[in-house]
Figure 1 (cartoon, each protein chain N blue to C red):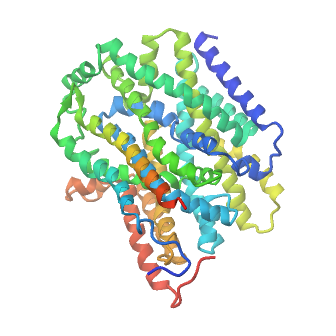
Figure 2 (cartoon, chains in turn red, yellow):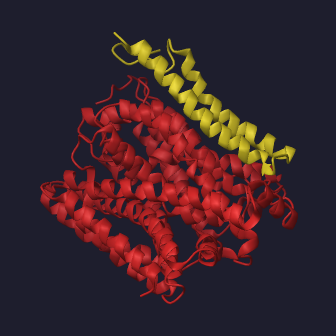
Figure 3 (cartoon, helix red, strand yellow):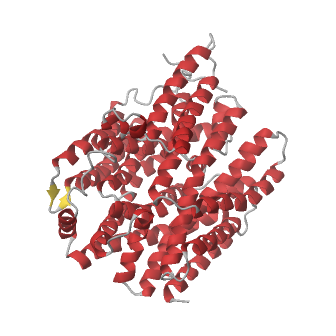
Length: 486
Length: 75
């Protein structure tokens, strides 16, 4: 075993140990297992929420897109800040309602708000549909990390299988407390590694940041500006909007909202978390540094750029440490996603369809679903295809369809009816699925339209249709007497 | 407009809360305009500098809103 893999294995054992240790002395009921029991302080909630944004997407996806796409990658820096400024107002409202009614999940929220368990099932299915590509992204990332730190001795396909076994074991061992403690280790590591790489690589290989960007601009003119077509300004803005509106619509993000002890936690997060996004800047620097030093990585291989550059810059022990940081950025969010998807399928889909299922049965079912969801993700992962970033964007096109109904359910005067919420979400999802399945794009569908329109992110187009249908159906189905919420 | 016993809209009596819209304007309207300048600051693309500056400003703005909210809510 080479030193890099050894370091990776050590960190894996450490995170498993943290999981076992965190779990000791806690009765793992379903609520314990997923929500961790209410009463996490603001520090824990902070770490859980921070843990969700530092994923493989940040580490390998961010650098891969800086390497392969250039300026369009900057969208990743923008949407978090917008989401946090919104969270200040949005999350306390969601939290208060959840605490009042003892809700555990996003599906509970919708089902309760609209008095419709069926809507809860629909929301759950949309959430799981969005989480699978996000989980695939983490697995792909883990595969890349294991394969690269083995210096190519382990193939990516084998690495993905190893990774999924590790991930399932981790989830079964740890639950949310384990994730929170590992998140501490992970955040410290990724922060240190990203900042160190983002400063060291440009200085070491180019003599400085300015020199690096000048060299890139000279070799690839226009790479550091948004292109006129394709990922143009119009794509950029619509994608930032899509991602920021959908940011808190992820079922696992929603659920971690409920782990807060008070509203103050959200306010503090809205102030601090935009700064957390700055880590991405350093990840971008590392990705940019790779452009002229490890050229020629095409298509999905762009995601290898960061680790490839590290392999030619550092010795195997350092590569192992960098890989370990990457491992944790995949393991923690991956475990959260896997756990959340399994719990949602057991509780909010099966439990809602078969009323009267006991809590204990649902908990057992949730655990059995963990390997099932993991296997489905492995098969999608091994089918290959794109770089990491589009997987997350695909997830967002689904999950953002929940935003209009959620937002409009909050005001005192009910704007949206049950039928309106159903119709809106179904419309949005149908458009996304239709476009995905047919492989069409707006540019192909409407070749004569200006690119300002055809470059729009399809998720935003679907959301606009979603809102229109939602409003029309709500207006048509509104009862003469405004209904007060339960 | 509001039912009795319901919380008022989030901005009622707290106009400073509108500041929270600034980051969205800066990044969704401002960023594409900045991009067109194709300018650099010490070699670094101005677009990137602009975005990073607004991340910092977002934090500052939310801190100001939080501080003013705390003052409003003090009994």
